[in-house]
Image (cartoon, rainbow, N blue to C red; front, side, top):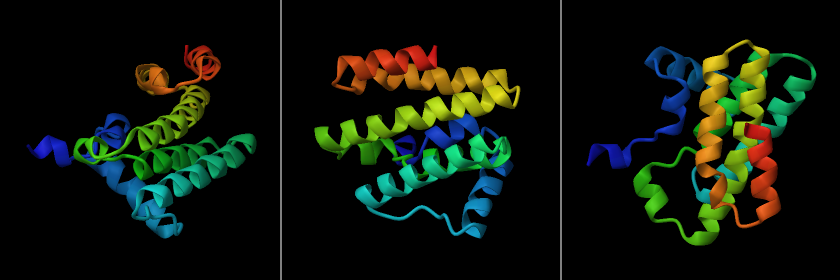
Length: 145
């Protein structure tokens, strides 16, 4: 099935191909292309998340958005790839996805993009129960609501 090979999270936010291509071009130009390998991708996504936080603090919401979407792209594993992950990898992925989505929802909100704010929050709420720590689950639910 073709959908099993297709990444979905970035398409969730960038519904128009041109937007997605612009983001990928920006990542290439900035030297922030997605590495291969599970651990390398998680590390790179965390780096992009932190970079996005720096831009957010400087109120450069456009760059913060690019970094957040770049982080989503970096950990946007296809369903087939996700099926091959073990439980520890799934937990690591969820543990990184949620702060990225929380950050994105704040960036979208500051940009006045209510529709995308709801998308980011809704996606986070769908994945929050993958965390094991009840305090973490409650913390992210509060941030994403």
